[in-house]
Image (cartoon, rainbow, N blue to C red; front, side):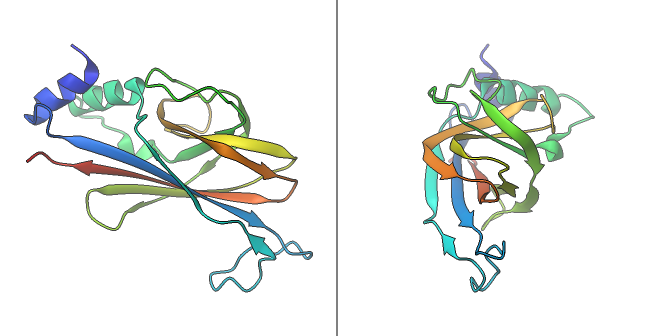
Length: 177
């Protein structure tokens, strides 16, 4: 039985449980002194427009892990907070287990409840050490390797040394009915 069907069976929803993921990116460019956007927006030389990317590519590996954890007394879902980014260009697929071409190190996101109790949110900001065309993001349960929860591909965000991208990942899970 496919892992998603197992999950639906365990919840007794048989098709009514749904999940929707959304990734928001903010490209932060420092001013000449290296300052990045403050909360009031005063210090930043430039902030590129937010880019939103809705995705339906929660991975098979994550769904299988969720089903396994529902059957375990050792559930560890709180570990899905590691944000990776890369330059891969292949389309997202439910069978993905890694990013296409991950670059630099993963950042640990701040986890929170979203606007409502059924939204999981993780936010991380990465400072790039070189010039890259960032085209993908992934949320993992480990700083290295681990299980890929979701991979999102987007139009290139060109960064140079010292520039940052803030990634906000939200997973909305809606109960049946």
